[in-house]
Image (cartoon, rainbow, N blue to C red; front, side, top):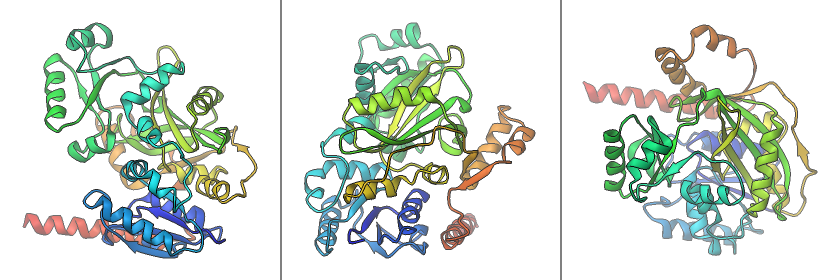
Length: 395
């Protein structure tokens, strides 16, 4: 295949899963990162080139030049894949330049950012009749009174720009229980130069979180899709999936496909929903616009999303496919699931028996692969070295 694939980011298992999903089909895959330490995706046997480039944040212009120069040397435009939100933001900002040298699903500059931004996403959802949690903005007049009359405590203070918020506070949201805590949380965000919104907490345990995972072609039509149900997250209650099962829920397709098609989406997207434990209604929480941590679960369930994208962008699209039945597979990120289980049990949300019973299912591992084991051992070696470094520092 003449077109290479270029993966932005290889120091997390999402980049690794993209490399594997493409490399197993004989596609030449290159990955670029800003350092080798901890970049365990570089150890995959499916990787053809490991590239070190400028940091996308510290030197964005240098990174852009690096990518353009790489693409110019190739016999055909590479297909570009982002493995993390900051890379998507970078691609969206420079989409007009990158599209001259790479194959990318999106053709509308700014759409990635509008969908990633919680405030503009919720406006889009409301415009298209999709239910979202009740929201108040700190810029609203008498916002504190509105929170107490409309949303109630506890409630969530959520960033409009999640990657920036997480980089500062190392968490995805602030959960607040009083007016004082709310004003303190809003002040912290403002001091960091970050915009936030305040939302009602949709009732229900973490297993009330669901996803609609889909690929949309150049005509913005859903061609491949399935749905999943989260079981555990880390950090618990408001974190990322660490134990999630593929689970068919037709209603999620009915809501999600219509929304993505109506906004003119192209390429892969994952909509996160929460099911209200009291009403049974689904609320749109956020949209992940790049390959997600459930990628290996989707692959095991029969949908190789990176390969689907590669084939369509290179002019030989695969036949449409819906996994509209239960496959029995679960995604498992064991490293963080151990931490999550500890916290679920400590807070009384789960029992040890419930956790142990849940493990008797077919696994789609985040990192481990019997066919490609070296990244797993590189990951373990890196984590061990960090642990030893911390112990040395304490001494």
